[in-house]
Image 1 (spheres, rainbow, N blue to C red):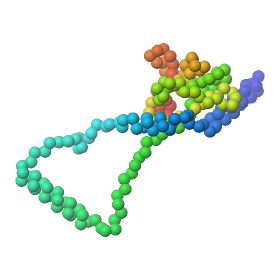
Image 2 (cartoon, helix red, strand yellow):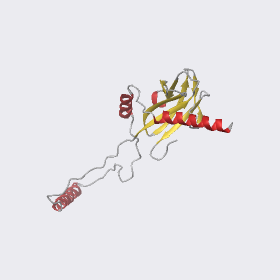
Image 3 (cartoon, one colour):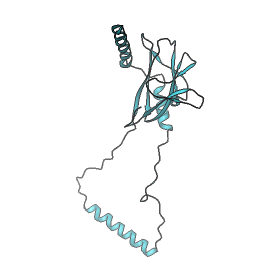
Image 4 (tube, rainbow, N blue to C red):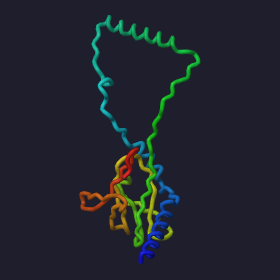
Length: 186
């Protein structure tokens, strides 16, 4: 009995591993949706530090002239220190990170499986079935953030991802929560 269970576990592991290693084409239009999402997503704003906040400065005309002359003098002195063969300054650019996330559900009895979440407006998008074993998967490009999703089995039953803790929604159903970021993936 134990040998049969171990053999079944090995076969299951091999099928699941093959599905996870399989090349996953992006769904049609995924790149366009990603670019549209990136363009539409507002950049997070941080509170401005005290030294960058605008201030009102009141000067007399003679004080303004003295300040302008002092600034001009600093500019002249600063350019004297620059040599002719100096290299131009280079600014570092930090790109946004896009994670390719593979969603997998093992359900041998399912005829069709789709994925719905806040990343696609809760519109169920079909997953690709593996050749055998009831393994369904899709890979989606997602930016860092928090995502809620569920699998839709046979067009009617919503199932939370068994690989993540389930959370209850306001309708009494279950869904999964995925956190993507530089230091947190769960």
